[in-house]
Image (tube, rainbow over all chains, first blue to last red):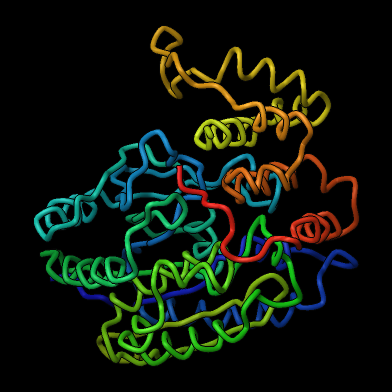
Length: 287
Length: 119
């Protein structure tokens, strides 16, 4: 049976790649602190010695579009090309190619359907920065096969928060029921408070630092009950118009399990949004 | 309201470097050409399969012709699409984050709830 070697949740700030590789006058003042936090975060995955990465992210209207919009989609392909022209343009992200694990993708699709999730699938999925940013931060060698799982946090009507939690629980069960002796890390990225294209965008901090403080506490402590008592599809408009990406953190809390305290918790208050990083080890902290 | 079509315009232009420059330098001409030639083109299909009914309202056409991101926000265009395309067209004319902050400043008269972006 497969082992869940680590559960990892983080933000996916697309400026990290550029900030961390910049030199001289181009290097922003927060770059060194940011890199140090990312390197410590990366070590939490390295220590888990994963064979495969299940990666949860949200497409940003790159390949998924309003003419045929899935709510949850699993990529099942031998390879995934990555990053798009407008991400090179805006964030300086490199083109990438990642190997896929079709066997695990098939297992998740078959059993996910049977578990009540009408998962869409794609045999030619070009992935974007919600999945490549955690590759860049956590596994820059990009040497492990992935199974990408995309969620719709962008195009209303959206699934409600509880649905994301339940999908997370289901993904955990599906990985643990895969009859192959591999170590699987489940990695997902979302947002804390965030505003894009609205009056509160690009401030000195995320648009709602109080929400961010509570969100970090909920995630770090696995406080699903407390979180779901305050967070609804409607309430997520309040901390910023792009905060529905927080539901991917809720999904990862579902993967980690109610009450599961994270083994690694870190954050960085940047302009525009707060960065946050969490790692759980379901089978104990690796030595 | 044809929010879907507004978004389709922003989406198809944003992903094509030539169209980004064309829309930057000739907004009115690009909008007119796009509505005539591409509005009804079903994405990823041959031309023979195109739709027959998609068109902008006058207000939508005007907002796109005038690069009016405030009006597009009020019309319910998806703010991620508008922002990313407009950064591509206009950030180059400004200092670091200057354009993005001015963009938000121009929307300061809006408070919650923002216009509905559901299509």
